[in-house]
Length: 205
Ligand code: VGL
Ligand code: ZN
Image (cartoon, rainbow, N blue to C red; front, side):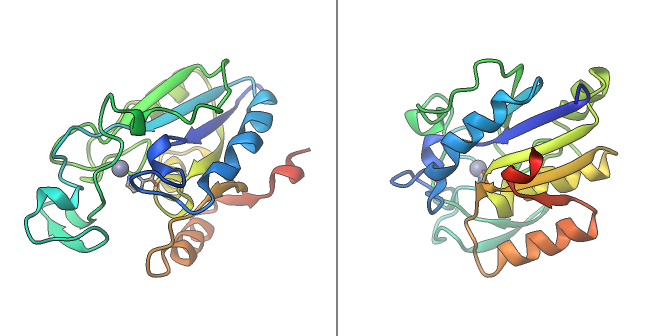
């Protein structure tokens, strides 16, 4: 599959058990992603990469607590614990992630006043990360997604991939979810409606 690319989303320490924004069983995906990635010629890694005091942090909004939602100029924003702060150990990739042949690392969420779950489009839904341009220039059309978290960065990235004209498949067992107030079920139904394919790693052959 010369035009396929595996996009490994946010396999970072802060999303692991014990991390600042722990995804339950997030560490379980690491060995599976390593095996999967070995079968892809083209691999891109994404990295959540926030400045201190970023707008998605509850700590930036006096009186607000993590996991509350607030209204921002660009829309609703879930507030998170401080996580993936640029240059900190929590923002680093999990030490056991072994994808030496990854070709590009996309950092996102680096604007102080705009969050970005998606690897393509920031939360203002206007500012691009440049990833679609990169993939298009390289002729990579079939995108496969894995990583953390299924219902936030993986789902938003897969949905935006479809909107940008790519084929998108989420490898379900190579992802783990946060699942806030049914966000996982909603993510899967939004992805089905957008013709995002859903497969198990074993089905990739
Ligand atoms: C993520 C919440 C905040 C993710 C990133 O990687 O899914 N979720 N920042
Ligand atoms: Zn984040």
